[in-house]
Length: 291
Image (cartoon, rainbow, N blue to C red; front, side, top):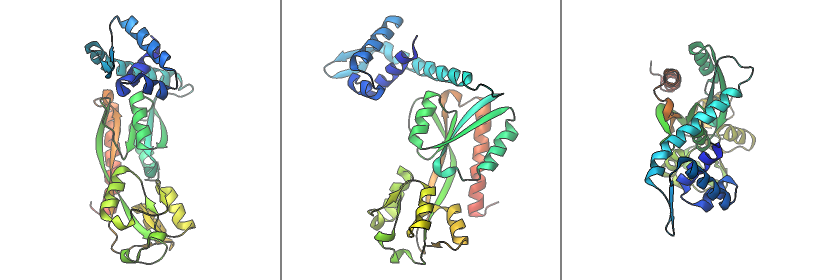
């Protein structure tokens, strides 16, 4: 069975539209229709009902969907195994939210290596939406992210929180803050909602950025004020580059670990999740001073 048939079927399960699936897969509508007909011929059952109201899964289609997701995941896993040429042991692909790459990454890597010495680790920085898609497709094994997405193939566990604090290149209080000097952070939907609720007067400004490293660079090169991760703020304050903004609220961001639901009970993934939980618990203790 061609994997394109499975990919097309699963995409159509989401869009319920031959036109939308054709656009998303960059093929013609007739190609989508041909692939579905070919898959139905192989299975010997109709998978979709087509009507003026739209496209809906048949009972057989509903039953086939979870197996199709499993087939896609196993296919990508098999491809990854064949592409790890020259590497010894098992390869684990780990996605990290961009802002979390600087969170003592060497300590995290050391903990993984100590616990799983025969494993090859491939790390990649990305955003939550793409990491969730990669987990579903089997392109990543585990992801540390800000914004989990509900999907039957995904399982998430909370790891803790990280803190963002407001700093400025000039000593000032929140009451003295002007919008023309303020750089709006947009690190995640949860962060944006919290910021809008806490600081509505600073929600509409002329410059916004969505990555902690870029915010640090803007603050040091252009000057101004904005939210950065606490450890970045501490470094800039210690260097005399920035000052804490008095009375500005701290905004916390929840951190999650995501894996494919098929792997949630496998021992190697449970061990990796425990390492991640301890890693972010350590960072939380560093911030709060708890033992």
